[in-house]
Length: 181
Image 1 (cartoon, rainbow, N blue to C red):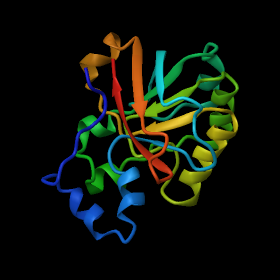
Image 2 (cartoon, rainbow, N blue to C red):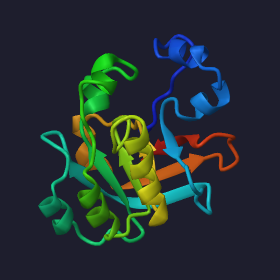
Image 3 (cartoon, rainbow, N blue to C red):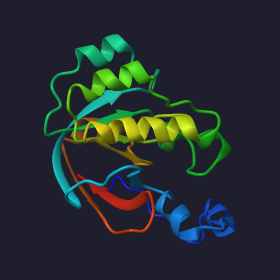
Image 4 (cartoon, rainbow, N blue to C red):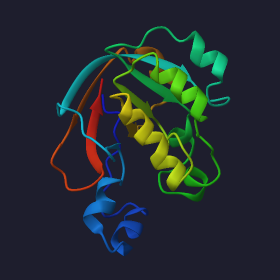
């Protein structure tokens, strides 16, 4: 089953992409993608067990992050419900739903050693510099963030392992990827 979103020229958000001066760079951050600002993973494919954290009522607190088990050789999915409730590219999706992870909470999560953090939203930080800093912090721990996955509520209990594939050589800090389970 796919967790990545498939967008074509008929999708309303595609108009944004066409307006960008750097279409290749923008395309890398369009739809489901892995952010790679300071480094890229050594492999272009991951097959990992997952731990899902239900964030529909709010992003993780320091206490919740502390209670997580070791995430070594695993992926952490932050399930917010944002992409399920709001259309990708809409104002509600990007501007009316805050899925930011506080820096101290992120550091606690990263100390649990996940290989990937996936989120069904636009990212783990507010747009702009904060967003990029959160991703760069993850990269400094050898962890990468995959944004804009789609999960339906009924799928939460059926996702145990994910398979991620992306092009390491895509010429952007965002690299489109597929995510399946």
